[in-house]
Image 1 (tube, rainbow, N blue to C red):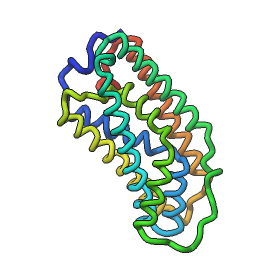
Image 2: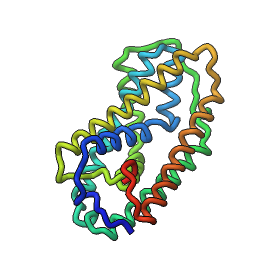
Image 3: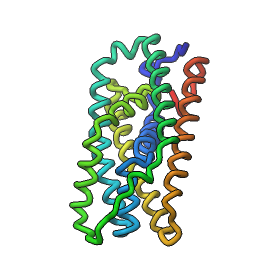
Image 4: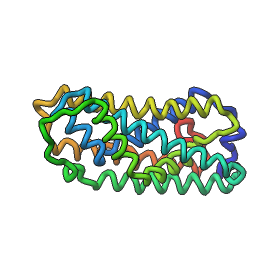
Length: 227
């Protein structure tokens, strides 16, 4: 069992920054309906439309991240207990494992739909992406798993916590920026089956991260990237 509690240990701004970026990427990367929508708009309308779609999703994600974080901050007495934190990190790792497996076996190609030639305004593309993402509150469970696994909630350090939330937005935006850039560059050679391959790569990474989480929690070893 771990003996170094994340609240008692010194808080590194760089550490919470890295955690936030990682959480933002994990929350955004799986190719669900919004990811597929971003790909389709990038291919059919242009990169800026795909990027705006990703920004809309990122805004929705940070709202749910804040709801999750502030909700967990109200139970800090429970989380500060070493045994409870040990159990929470195991549960978080288990939830990440399930999420990784579901990502790996899912086939995002089923979410592809016919699109019209009308581009619409950038605001329209932003709003529709935001609403589509916001209509799925189940992402809260993913944030609970990530926050527990990475000991992300630190209400006694408001400055570092704010940096962490900003980093989540940064990580999400980084993902959408890189995704739309890549798809735009290979648009003439893009194949739909490549989306499933990408999903399996993402799922594999999440599965490995969850296994590493189990290992470090059960052995009591401290890994800055996970604890």
